[in-house]
Length: 175
Image (cartoon, rainbow, N blue to C red; front, top):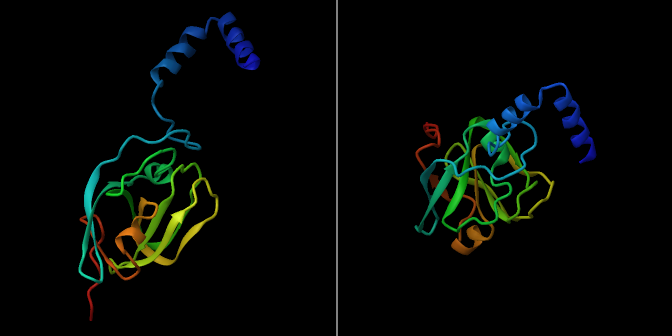
């Protein structure tokens, strides 16, 4: 704090303090768009998503769409609650391995990896909050879905179930 005070006092002596204060005020309350995230992002636009289980049950969710690289980087970081009927969907530009982590994520999550055929390829249940361990899809996926920790087990959602939502790319045609 002393260093900051000294620096600001030096700027004031040069007659530049008013410009610095104006620049700081102009960005007050605006999350930093670069660097390490320091706060939860505002709620993102949502769309409905359904998971059809092998037993015929349909599970409905409202998911935030993490579309930009920054939205995807921040994800669910710093949030303290995720209702069981909500989530966040990351749709990748092309099928790729998805590696997620829980840095700065304060709540457990179920991480669901979705293949090009819209089938669930893998689920990491109850990912540990604040963990730096990488959670991998172990193969190419078109999207990754984050749900509240424990929801997949509670609802009986499993590998092979089908995910339906408007933002997933059209599945490849079968020969």
